[in-house]
Image 1 (spheres, one colour):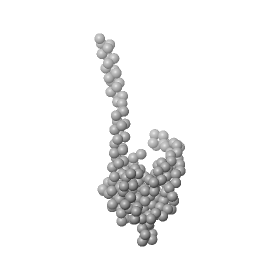
Image 2: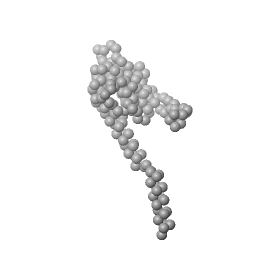
Image 3: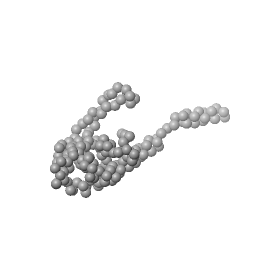
Image 4: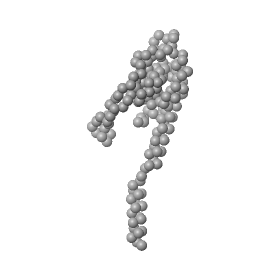
Length: 171
């Protein structure tokens, strides 16, 4: 679920696959708050309106074995151009998000298009992508804490069970 590009490092430049991976998992409130001011000054030209479909997810036995079909997931995709009134050529923004959130896919595609332009890149990286990265890190830490709270150390359990049996036999 969490990839190596979830953390923004200052040492390397941010590439398009990096920001698309973050935008695909960005929550809708973060996308709306960052992109609402920028969206009002632009016109959306649809290349592909948001549409929902299914993707087959594959797994591997033990992470390295033969691939097998695990199941299907719902994915929403869209493609658009965000055009200023005076601009003739604008880059295409593309997004794929899990689930049926058409608005989330639209905003992620808009962010992709704006990040390619360069004029808003620094603003979006420092505002939106850093926030999304922090959100994903907090989500990961929360999940790890939840898993850690249910962890059982079987060596300790076996030792404690063995100590109790010896004490009863000694009496």
